[in-house]
Structures are given as C-alpha cells and as structure tokens.
Length: 187
Image (cartoon, rainbow, N blue to C red):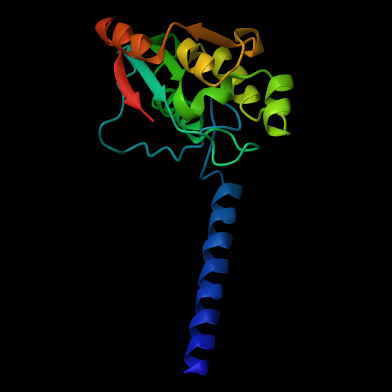
C-alpha cells in the first residue's frame, strides 16, 4: 500500500513538472502574447477560429467588476480579463478606435481604484492594479469606480487614483450604458 502511494506521488510530481515545463516552453515560444495591453490579459490568438470579431464593426462593452483580488499584491483577475478582451479584439483586427469599453468596479473590486499611498495604508503593499489601469486608459478604456461602494468601504473620494473615473454608482453605470447600446460583461 505504501509503495502504491509513493508511486502515485512520484507520477503526480512528474506530471506536474511536465505541465509546468510545457507552459514555460509555450510562453518562451510566444504561445501567450499581450499585443496591446503589454504584460496583461495574455491571449493565444487562433486565426482560423469561429466567432471572431469583425474589424469593420464597433463594439461597446461595459464590464461589471465585483470580485476582490485573490491577494492584495495580485492584479484583480476581472481587470486582467478587461485587458484580455482588448488584446483579443485588436489581435482579430479590430482597431482601438472601434472599441468603446468601460469597466466599473464595485463590491469587493472597489479597492483596485485606490491610489498607491492609500492602498499601501490599507493593504501594506503597492497597488498592483495601477500599471494595468494606466495601460487600459492609454488604449481608450475607461476604468471607473462606484461612488456608493467607495463610501461603503469608508474610503474618501480623494483617495482614488488619477486614472479612475468616479461613477455615481455601479448600478446606474451599467444600466445607463446598456441603454446606450453597450453589452454587459459581468466579471
């Protein structure tokens, strides 16, 4: 019985090492790329895939970001998915000028909007989201935060990072933009 467990453990360790080596090799070969939002929202573009965006169309998307980061020093995964979306559309040939994207943070995602000084006070680490927010803004994405959630978290509005847009609320941002033809992507 003990020998079986040791063999199983050895097999699992070898399998894990093989998967990790394959992932590292794939990254080294350019399998994963970040063509527009550099360093974030990695994609693997498949040219002959179905349901690709049409480069001639314009796309309006509002992202509802509600989940907290897995750890204070980790980029918010939902915000990284916004970057992935931009990277996928651009890789498919859609110009940035054809993308109208708003991400609104509320609930557990609210702290991602804090400036570095106040994030450090709250979590003891620099805000890892700020470089990504700057990249998104440069690509034309509006990253906003719900004023109601800021108040509920006990944050002051002047604690927000410069690249953040203060929205009346997450609820009104989503419904207002949907009425203007945006598609909701809850994350």
